[in-house]
Length: 212
Ligand SMILES: O=P(O)(O)OC[C@H]1O[C@H](OP(=O)(O)OP(=O)(O)O)[C@H](O)[C@@H]1O
Ligand SMILES: O=c1cc[nH]c(=O)[nH]1
Ligand SMILES: [Mg+2]
Image (cartoon, rainbow, N blue to C red; front, side, top):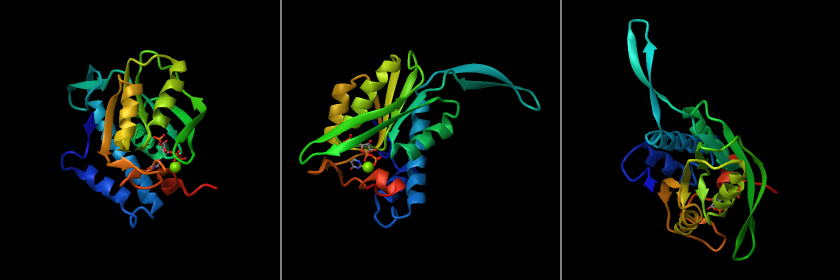
């Protein structure tokens, strides 16, 4: 597992702004910070991908370059996943995308997740990056991954989240043991409504407004 804020970097600053009730009122900044953490994690994941050598002609001479051998498939979960996904897409700019509509149904002590719309390219033999900023119970990511397997068997799976709970992380590791996990932070616990504490609140509402 990789936690990108474990060393000093600007990622810590973006994460602190995302959590801050005074800063997060600015939804444009909130979305942009999700996007920037997506970019940072995309860059980190890129160190684990394959590259092919190519001779590139500059205006002055030839130069040997390293080009990404194949672009990963970028999957995300609506709604809060959208700005985070855009960060990955900014770097992996030729990647195909997969979208999932999943929502949490909060019962008193349990959260159930309903997976609805799902669109994806073939995942056979692809690198798959499944990105969702909040990994709370882990059910959204685990069910999404299972539902996506009908589009083929990826050869490598990366799961990226901004904030995870220990319980959710355990669930995802049990359900998807082959996944490489990338986080900005691993928080303390889930509260009785299955929100991450300290967390940042409701990422979807902060990015796009509260729903009825
Ligand atoms: O780990 P889990 O317990 O499954 O929770 C995580 C899910 O909660 C958030 O979405 P939410 O259901 O709030 O939808 P929204 O983005 O539309 O607000 C988040 O983006 C995840 O998809
Ligand atoms: O803490 C949480 C849990 C689920 N979804 C969120 O947006 N935040
Ligand atoms: Mg939400």
